[in-house]
Amino acid sequence: MKRKEFIKASGTALFGGLIFRNSPANLSRSFPEIFAPRPIGLQLYTFFGVMDEDVEGTLKKIAAVGYKEIESAYSKKGGYYGMKPKEFAKFLNDIGLSWKSHHVLGAPFKLPPGAKMPVGQDGKPITFPPMRNLQNNMEELVDEAAEGGVEFLVCANTPIHTLDEIKASIEVLNKTDEACKKAGIGFAYHNHDAEFHTVDGQVPYEMFLSQTNMKMELDLAWATKGGKDPVELFKQNPGRFPLWHVKDLDAKRETVLPVGEGTIDYKRIFDAASTAGMKHFFIEHDMPKDALASITSSYKYLTKMLLPNG
Image (cartoon, rainbow, N blue to C red; front, side, top):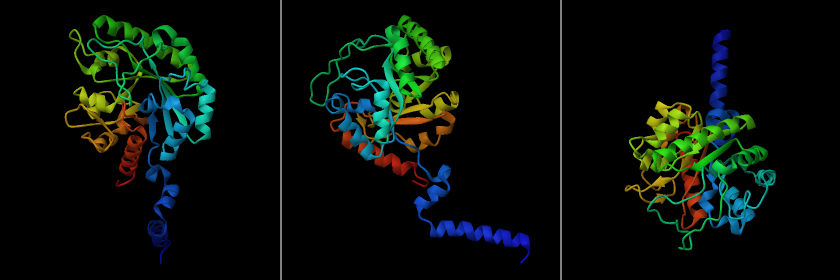
Protein backbone atom coordinates (compact mmCIF):
# COMPACT_ATOMS: atom_id res chain seq x y z
CA MET A 1 0.00 0.00 0.00
CA LYS A 2 1.30 3.42 -0.93
CA ARG A 3 2.08 5.80 1.94
CA LYS A 4 -0.77 8.27 1.07
CA GLU A 5 -3.32 5.44 0.83
CA PHE A 6 -2.11 3.97 4.17
CA ILE A 7 -2.54 7.32 5.97
CA LYS A 8 -6.02 7.78 4.50
CA ALA A 9 -7.08 4.25 5.43
CA SER A 10 -5.64 4.58 8.95
CA GLY A 11 -7.48 7.85 9.53
CA THR A 12 -10.75 6.35 8.34
CA ALA A 13 -10.30 3.36 10.61
CA LEU A 14 -9.50 5.58 13.60
CA PHE A 15 -12.54 7.80 13.12
CA GLY A 16 -14.69 4.76 12.41
CA GLY A 17 -13.46 3.28 15.67
CA LEU A 18 -14.50 6.43 17.50
CA ILE A 19 -17.96 6.29 15.95
CA PHE A 20 -18.66 2.63 16.54
CA ARG A 21 -16.75 1.90 19.76
CA ASN A 22 -17.09 5.10 21.78
CA SER A 23 -20.22 6.05 23.66
CA PRO A 24 -21.90 9.46 23.00
CA ALA A 25 -20.40 10.65 26.29
CA ASN A 26 -16.89 9.78 25.08
CA LEU A 27 -17.57 11.48 21.77
CA SER A 28 -18.59 14.66 23.56
CA ARG A 29 -15.27 14.60 25.41
CA SER A 30 -13.36 14.07 22.15
CA PHE A 31 -15.23 16.78 20.24
CA PRO A 32 -16.78 19.09 22.87
CA GLU A 33 -17.45 21.97 20.49
CA ILE A 34 -19.64 19.69 18.36
CA PHE A 35 -21.35 17.41 20.85
CA ALA A 36 -21.63 19.40 24.10
CA PRO A 37 -25.05 21.04 24.62
CA ARG A 38 -25.20 24.67 25.69
CA PRO A 39 -25.34 25.34 29.46
CA ILE A 40 -28.96 25.93 30.44
CA GLY A 41 -29.69 28.89 32.70
CA LEU A 42 -32.62 29.92 34.89
CA GLN A 43 -34.09 33.31 35.76
CA LEU A 44 -34.87 33.17 39.48
CA TYR A 45 -38.01 35.30 39.07
CA THR A 46 -39.60 31.93 38.26
CA PHE A 47 -39.46 31.25 42.02
CA PHE A 48 -40.60 34.72 43.11
CA GLY A 49 -42.53 34.62 46.38
CA VAL A 50 -41.30 31.08 47.07
CA MET A 51 -37.52 31.29 46.99
CA ASP A 52 -37.19 33.79 49.85
CA GLU A 53 -38.69 31.22 52.21
CA ASP A 54 -35.73 28.89 51.62
CA VAL A 55 -33.03 30.46 49.47
CA GLU A 56 -30.31 27.84 49.85
CA GLY A 57 -32.70 24.89 49.60
CA THR A 58 -34.34 26.30 46.47
CA LEU A 59 -31.00 26.92 44.75
CA LYS A 60 -29.87 23.37 45.55
CA LYS A 61 -33.07 21.99 43.99
CA ILE A 62 -32.43 24.09 40.87
CA ALA A 63 -28.88 22.74 40.62
CA ALA A 64 -30.15 19.18 41.10
CA VAL A 65 -32.39 19.52 38.04
CA GLY A 66 -29.25 20.19 35.99
CA TYR A 67 -29.17 23.96 35.58
CA LYS A 68 -25.71 25.52 35.35
CA GLU A 69 -26.26 29.27 35.04
CA ILE A 70 -28.31 31.74 37.05
CA GLU A 71 -29.85 35.14 36.44
CA SER A 72 -30.99 36.76 39.67
CA ALA A 73 -33.85 39.15 40.30
CA TYR A 74 -35.50 41.11 43.10
CA SER A 75 -35.69 39.49 46.54
CA LYS A 76 -37.89 40.52 49.46
CA LYS A 77 -34.99 39.60 51.74
CA GLY A 78 -32.98 42.51 50.38
CA GLY A 79 -29.61 42.46 48.68
CA TYR A 80 -29.14 39.27 46.70
CA TYR A 81 -31.59 36.94 48.41
CA GLY A 82 -30.34 38.16 51.76
CA MET A 83 -26.66 37.92 50.81
CA LYS A 84 -23.92 40.30 49.73
CA PRO A 85 -22.79 40.02 46.08
CA LYS A 86 -19.61 38.02 46.73
CA GLU A 87 -21.39 35.83 49.27
CA PHE A 88 -24.17 35.01 46.81
CA ALA A 89 -21.68 34.29 44.01
CA LYS A 90 -19.68 31.95 46.27
CA PHE A 91 -22.73 30.01 47.40
CA LEU A 92 -23.81 29.49 43.80
CA ASN A 93 -20.33 28.39 42.81
CA ASP A 94 -20.15 25.94 45.72
CA ILE A 95 -23.27 24.10 44.49
CA GLY A 96 -22.24 24.08 40.82
CA LEU A 97 -24.05 27.19 39.59
CA SER A 98 -22.58 30.22 37.82
CA TRP A 99 -24.02 33.71 38.36
CA LYS A 100 -24.21 35.34 34.93
CA SER A 101 -26.54 38.33 35.23
CA HIS A 102 -28.82 40.32 37.51
CA HIS A 103 -32.12 42.16 36.92
CA VAL A 104 -32.83 45.67 38.21
CA LEU A 105 -35.56 48.24 37.64
CA GLY A 106 -35.02 51.23 35.37
CA ALA A 107 -37.10 53.58 37.51
CA PRO A 108 -39.27 53.40 40.65
CA PHE A 109 -41.84 50.65 40.25
CA LYS A 110 -45.39 51.56 39.29
CA LEU A 111 -48.15 49.64 37.58
CA PRO A 112 -49.05 50.49 33.97
CA PRO A 113 -52.37 52.30 33.53
CA GLY A 114 -55.25 49.88 34.11
CA ALA A 115 -53.00 47.03 35.24
CA LYS A 116 -53.58 44.97 38.37
CA MET A 117 -51.02 43.67 40.84
CA PRO A 118 -49.73 40.22 39.81
CA VAL A 119 -51.03 37.27 41.81
CA GLY A 120 -48.72 34.83 43.59
CA GLN A 121 -48.97 31.07 43.89
CA ASP A 122 -51.20 31.52 46.94
CA GLY A 123 -53.74 33.41 44.83
CA LYS A 124 -53.13 36.69 46.64
CA PRO A 125 -51.87 39.93 45.01
CA ILE A 126 -48.11 40.36 45.35
CA THR A 127 -46.93 43.45 47.18
CA PHE A 128 -43.59 45.02 46.33
CA PRO A 129 -41.64 46.86 49.03
CA PRO A 130 -39.47 49.76 47.82
CA MET A 131 -36.91 48.60 45.24
CA ARG A 132 -33.70 50.22 44.12
CA ASN A 133 -33.60 51.36 40.51
CA LEU A 134 -31.22 52.75 37.90
CA GLN A 135 -32.76 56.19 37.95
CA ASN A 136 -31.94 56.71 41.62
CA ASN A 137 -29.37 54.05 42.54
CA MET A 138 -27.39 53.38 39.38
CA GLU A 139 -23.86 53.64 40.77
CA GLU A 140 -24.38 51.28 43.69
CA LEU A 141 -26.24 48.74 41.54
CA VAL A 142 -23.47 48.75 38.92
CA ASP A 143 -20.77 48.50 41.59
CA GLU A 144 -22.50 45.58 43.29
CA ALA A 145 -22.93 43.71 40.02
CA ALA A 146 -19.24 44.14 39.27
CA GLU A 147 -18.36 43.06 42.80
CA GLY A 148 -20.38 39.87 42.36
CA GLY A 149 -18.58 39.08 39.13
CA VAL A 150 -21.65 38.91 36.89
CA GLU A 151 -21.20 39.37 33.15
CA PHE A 152 -24.30 41.52 32.67
CA LEU A 153 -26.50 43.92 34.57
CA VAL A 154 -29.98 43.90 32.99
CA CYS A 155 -32.74 46.49 33.13
CA ALA A 156 -35.83 44.37 33.70
CA ASN A 157 -38.29 47.11 32.72
CA THR A 158 -38.61 50.88 32.54
CA PRO A 159 -41.46 53.39 32.02
CA ILE A 160 -42.55 53.55 28.35
CA HIS A 161 -46.20 54.64 28.51
CA THR A 162 -45.56 58.08 26.96
CA LEU A 163 -42.95 59.48 24.60
CA ASP A 164 -41.52 61.58 27.44
CA GLU A 165 -41.12 58.46 29.59
CA ILE A 166 -39.36 56.66 26.74
CA LYS A 167 -36.93 59.55 26.20
CA ALA A 168 -36.20 59.77 29.95
CA SER A 169 -35.65 56.00 30.06
CA ILE A 170 -33.23 56.16 27.13
CA GLU A 171 -31.19 58.76 29.00
CA VAL A 172 -30.97 56.51 32.08
CA LEU A 173 -30.16 53.45 29.96
CA ASN A 174 -27.33 55.22 28.13
CA LYS A 175 -25.82 56.46 31.40
CA THR A 176 -26.01 52.95 32.85
CA ASP A 177 -24.42 51.45 29.75
CA GLU A 178 -21.44 53.79 30.10
CA ALA A 179 -21.15 53.08 33.83
CA CYS A 180 -21.20 49.32 33.18
CA LYS A 181 -18.47 49.63 30.54
CA LYS A 182 -16.27 51.49 33.04
CA ALA A 183 -16.96 48.77 35.61
CA GLY A 184 -16.00 46.04 33.13
CA ILE A 185 -19.42 44.41 32.76
CA GLY A 186 -22.09 44.35 30.08
CA PHE A 187 -25.46 46.04 30.16
CA ALA A 188 -28.66 44.84 28.48
CA TYR A 189 -32.36 45.61 28.32
CA HIS A 190 -35.09 43.01 28.89
CA ASN A 191 -38.37 43.46 27.03
CA HIS A 192 -41.99 42.59 27.60
CA ASP A 193 -44.54 42.79 24.78
CA ALA A 194 -45.39 46.46 25.44
CA GLU A 195 -42.10 47.66 23.93
CA PHE A 196 -43.35 46.56 20.51
CA HIS A 197 -46.58 48.55 20.67
CA THR A 198 -46.75 52.05 19.19
CA VAL A 199 -46.61 54.98 21.64
CA ASP A 200 -47.31 58.44 20.22
CA GLY A 201 -46.33 57.22 16.77
CA GLN A 202 -43.10 55.57 17.94
CA VAL A 203 -42.19 51.97 18.79
CA PRO A 204 -40.21 51.95 22.08
CA TYR A 205 -38.10 48.92 21.17
CA GLU A 206 -37.05 50.47 17.87
CA MET A 207 -36.07 53.64 19.73
CA PHE A 208 -33.98 51.61 22.20
CA LEU A 209 -32.20 49.86 19.34
CA SER A 210 -31.46 53.06 17.41
CA GLN A 211 -30.75 55.49 20.27
CA THR A 212 -28.59 53.32 22.55
CA ASN A 213 -25.56 51.07 22.19
CA MET A 214 -26.62 48.69 24.95
CA LYS A 215 -27.13 45.00 24.32
CA MET A 216 -30.55 43.39 24.47
CA GLU A 217 -31.87 40.48 26.48
CA LEU A 218 -34.65 39.33 24.19
CA ASP A 219 -37.56 37.69 25.95
CA LEU A 220 -38.48 35.48 23.04
CA ALA A 221 -42.04 34.80 24.16
CA TRP A 222 -42.92 38.42 24.92
CA ALA A 223 -41.43 39.50 21.60
CA THR A 224 -43.57 36.89 19.87
CA LYS A 225 -46.64 38.10 21.78
CA GLY A 226 -45.76 41.64 20.66
CA GLY A 227 -45.98 40.53 17.04
CA LYS A 228 -42.25 40.24 16.32
CA ASP A 229 -40.32 37.33 14.83
CA PRO A 230 -37.16 36.90 16.97
CA VAL A 231 -35.19 35.47 14.04
CA GLU A 232 -35.95 38.55 11.93
CA LEU A 233 -34.87 40.80 14.83
CA PHE A 234 -31.56 38.90 14.93
CA LYS A 235 -31.06 39.36 11.18
CA GLN A 236 -31.82 43.08 11.39
CA ASN A 237 -29.54 43.61 14.42
CA PRO A 238 -26.87 40.87 14.33
CA GLY A 239 -24.83 40.39 17.48
CA ARG A 240 -27.08 42.64 19.59
CA PHE A 241 -28.75 39.86 21.61
CA PRO A 242 -26.26 38.09 23.92
CA LEU A 243 -28.98 37.14 26.42
CA TRP A 244 -32.32 35.41 25.91
CA HIS A 245 -35.34 34.59 28.05
CA VAL A 246 -36.96 31.32 27.09
CA LYS A 247 -40.60 30.58 27.93
CA ASP A 248 -43.53 29.24 25.94
CA LEU A 249 -47.02 30.54 25.14
CA ASP A 250 -50.34 28.97 24.19
CA ALA A 251 -51.90 29.51 20.78
CA LYS A 252 -53.76 32.62 21.97
CA ARG A 253 -50.48 34.12 23.28
CA GLU A 254 -52.13 34.58 26.68
CA THR A 255 -50.85 31.82 28.98
CA VAL A 256 -47.19 31.18 29.83
CA LEU A 257 -46.24 27.50 29.65
CA PRO A 258 -43.12 25.38 30.23
CA VAL A 259 -40.88 25.33 27.17
CA GLY A 260 -42.02 22.69 24.69
CA GLU A 261 -45.64 22.71 25.86
CA GLY A 262 -46.67 25.76 23.82
CA THR A 263 -46.56 26.94 20.24
CA ILE A 264 -43.20 28.71 19.84
CA ASP A 265 -40.76 27.03 17.42
CA TYR A 266 -37.63 27.09 19.55
CA LYS A 267 -35.61 24.86 17.26
CA ARG A 268 -35.81 27.54 14.57
CA ILE A 269 -34.86 30.29 17.04
CA PHE A 270 -31.88 28.42 18.51
CA ASP A 271 -30.64 27.69 14.99
CA ALA A 272 -30.19 31.48 14.70
CA ALA A 273 -28.18 31.80 17.93
CA SER A 274 -24.94 32.76 16.19
CA THR A 275 -26.68 35.55 14.26
CA ALA A 276 -28.13 36.87 17.51
CA GLY A 277 -24.74 36.74 19.23
CA MET A 278 -26.32 34.70 22.03
CA LYS A 279 -24.01 33.89 24.96
CA HIS A 280 -26.46 32.84 27.67
CA PHE A 281 -30.13 31.96 27.83
CA PHE A 282 -32.40 31.65 30.85
CA ILE A 283 -35.60 29.69 31.19
CA GLU A 284 -38.31 31.71 32.90
CA HIS A 285 -41.92 31.02 33.84
CA ASP A 286 -43.87 33.92 35.29
CA MET A 287 -45.84 32.89 38.41
CA PRO A 288 -46.19 29.14 37.71
CA LYS A 289 -48.34 27.01 39.99
CA ASP A 290 -45.42 24.63 40.54
CA ALA A 291 -42.10 26.29 39.71
CA LEU A 292 -39.96 23.19 40.23
CA ALA A 293 -42.18 21.04 38.00
CA SER A 294 -42.16 23.76 35.32
CA ILE A 295 -38.39 24.23 35.22
CA THR A 296 -37.85 20.46 35.21
CA SER A 297 -40.13 20.04 32.19
CA SER A 298 -38.47 22.94 30.35
CA TYR A 299 -35.00 21.62 31.16
CA LYS A 300 -35.77 18.14 29.80
CA TYR A 301 -37.23 19.55 26.61
CA LEU A 302 -34.34 21.92 25.88
CA THR A 303 -31.69 19.36 26.83
CA LYS A 304 -33.07 16.99 24.21
CA MET A 305 -33.56 19.74 21.62
CA LEU A 306 -30.03 21.09 21.98
CA LEU A 307 -28.31 17.73 21.58
CA PRO A 308 -27.07 16.96 18.05
CA ASN A 309 -29.99 15.56 16.05
CA GLY A 310 -32.18 16.25 19.09
